[in-house]
Image 1: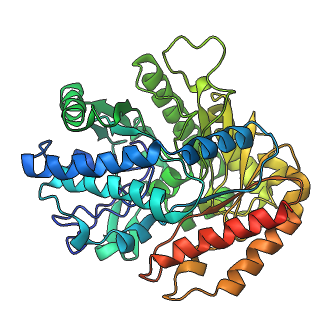
Image 2: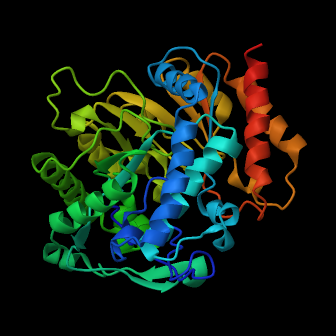
Length: 450
């Protein structure tokens, strides 16, 4: 996966065994490749039996009529038809508090990763209560390695999923010419081995698909701050503006080169389906792929996504000068686009609104809801992200949560709203918290529809 920054596999043997509890892998719905790539591709007969039993439960859930109803709602929602507010909850690191080590019955490393994945699907289908569709599909990613840019940040701290800092390697812009594009090298033999193994285990139960999932965000600024340092980037906007523009141009061109490589080598996958897109929500739409699609996926057949959380303290004008112009050519490549994550977009909406074919706009917990509701109206998806800290206590304040959701839905009447609970570092070690949040969100969504 090409994220621009490092992914740090923490030693979480107390959670999943053998250090497989990567908080940037298994717990996040949209990235597990790093963890999968680190293990041997083998499944024992003992583990195969367990996995097949779990897969049958997933298949049974996926065949329920309600999954068709939810899928239809997502299509209508993403295609800008009026629906009730959509609801999605991804506990992220909270998954480790829902699926605990004692629940995992498999013994092998790969089997435990796949078991974790299947148990997430079962929880989503049987207990969560949101609008995520459980699909009868088991997706496999490619095996690959990354070739860095010629310099790499040094991570300091971060043990046991704790805080960390980094030593940024680009100390002086005189080093800029020594950078080369970060690339990926696909191991096709190992990728086929993983796909064949998954088909052997699941193919008569779930549809097994290879999925090219190479990035989460194409926003550039994560790579920027890892290379140069957070504070230094802000100083560069005043002290070294020309050099900073050169660095941003390099990162833009690097990303465009990656997209060219993935297209030419047929390594992209459609995300107009149950794929997680942007910073929350799903890709179901009839508007993608393009009418001339012939089976080979191009970026213009896909949803794209940029954000710039690292520049949250940068003025809108500086964001407009140093960040967005370099994201724009990337967004131009895609058929539909999402923008934003945790950064509040109200102050920089006049810039972000220029994104081509923009469809899904993140409205974070720190954004001006009323202002963005007026700006987005019926022209965009209002992707609301309530504060994840609401679920971080052993017992949640249901009255407070209900009021917050109620206020949001009242201010966004007439908008295409989705309520996305994510970015949870903890759910208070109480799985009931996410279940109750989804129930409250559904009650409020149904109430607002009258």
